[in-house]
Length: 254
Length: 92
Image (cartoon, rainbow over all chains, first blue to last red; front, top):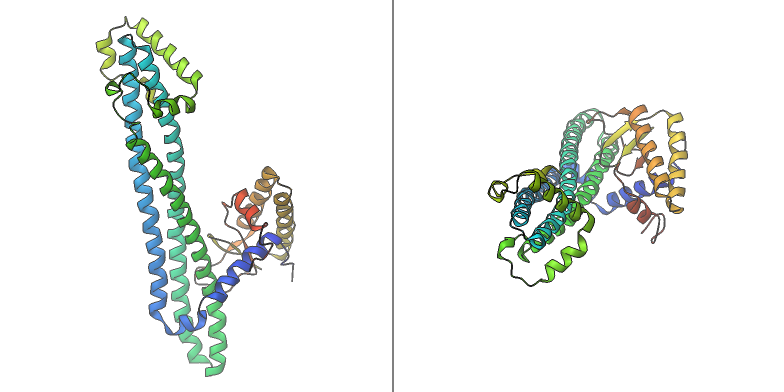
């Protein structure tokens, strides 16, 4: 037979085999326990629900951050129109930090989306295999002696067992990723708690820790050029602060 | 020969394709060991593409086991490296 020597695939195959060895004998499980099969499918469904929950949480956060970007942009304009360049700079620095966070979140949401998709497919595939096995088992039992039937049923069960093990691996991987994302969502929540989203106009004169961190994080040149652009827009528009304060959202698409 | 892409499904491949697959597989591992991330990504991409292009997807009710199982198509360089370090090839 053409080689089974690819090292990468050998490792993965070994992993699957190990999972199979550790599991209960799939032929026994499949032969006698309808309940076990249903449990397995339920597990996959539960894993899928976890992924969906994590995705929803990230989506909510993403919406919140988007609103914050708009708000900070507006505040920067207002501050600049009112002659407070330092406050405008702080607002833009925060906007930069939040935009970076937003980008990360959007990437993760997309990843969870594809996890959800493939888990749904995996689940359907596993269900088909289990059903195929159940009907094949009845056919085998009708055609062969008890001893021969047992051998054939075991053979068929190997294929289902492999599918189960693979779905198990895929689910573990999806859940690990979801766990990482949960940690990230938590970090965003903490950023919010620490006051990063608070209304800038309510900030005192003194710099807090967050201000210093934000300055380190955000790219100075980006903020500088945004400030210059806003100044130019203000000059062109005659510097009417009232108009500008009414929610120009030019920065959102930037 | 039956090849599974872990997390995706099974495909039936002609022996010739499996031989090419083996070569790519071993080259991919060599790239991991040499720490060449770009080369690994390229080779592993070729592996998955080869299986999808030349393999015939197995029906969902086909109960045959796989001869070859390759890692999930979105395996990262770090994950691949992890497989080949520490515990050795086949951890136990």
